[in-house]
Length: 358
Image 1 (cartoon, rainbow, N blue to C red):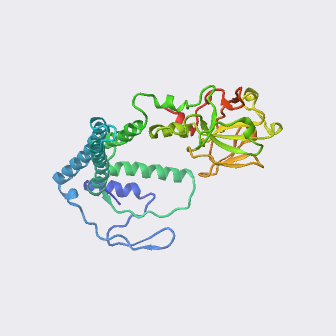
Image 2 (image 1 turned 45 degrees about the vertical axis):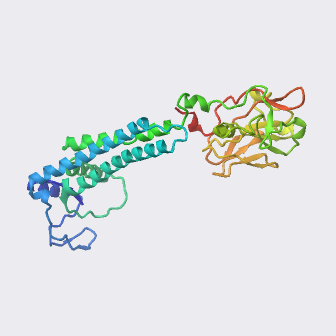
Image 3 (image 1 turned 90 degrees about the vertical axis):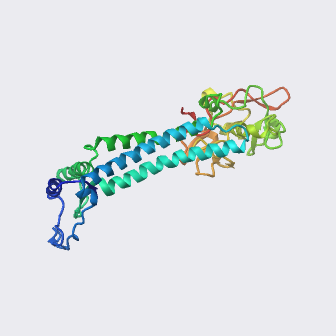
């Protein structure tokens, strides 16, 4: 049922506009539909107060756009509260104030849009009863024309184009509503650094030894046997303070050894491995889960979250699952003492592709 303030002329126009594709019954009457079934008709129409009282109708319109403006105010306040009540260190009171005022703004934004839309439908939109016959699914010109007419009728009945104040306030509320989320998500990154720049680098650098996780012991090339797989991190990160654990996780690497003849290396990466030993990021390129399962007979790596599979023998290309790009490879070499070391940091961002986007 669509609802709006209307005159007798509007109702007559609504009835005539639907005559071509709807079966409209006057209250208390019955009609025979095209498929031969009897439609018992509609109960007597009960006009609303906004239909009979123009002042009530104007008041309902004011209520609707006031609620939409309140939604805009709530969205703006949520963004302002995020900046006015920052979370400093481990201050519990700051966390409470931040959560309370941002929550109040988000609540007002949701309340304004939701209640405004409901009040619009119940008190302002045209109140006309219609019975729509079901038609077979099809794409004939007549069907498309009827669908276009339905949209035109819906626009007329809702008053979306005609009531500019309600329309503009709703558009403003919908534009303002996502702003608090944009500001809050930006706050996940350190304030003094570019988050995109941070995601392009890890703690690997030239000469850093590969160390076992969690012991932190450096690993020699001779310790990596064919078919084995090790979880490794940069040396010195085993006892990293809690505040930088995310850096340790981002630098996690899987180290494996294959027969050199089984490796199908890209020409530009021929020097990135050592005697069949290769190192790849442990962070899945789908949504960032840890790739932890290695099948030595097939040389496949499996992400347990969404079953993406990567072929280690073929530069960790994706062979199954939702991941869209191979795991980034860490260039490795051996130092004078036989320990495995990184030649450089990863040459591409680790983790999901959306991490790279600004």
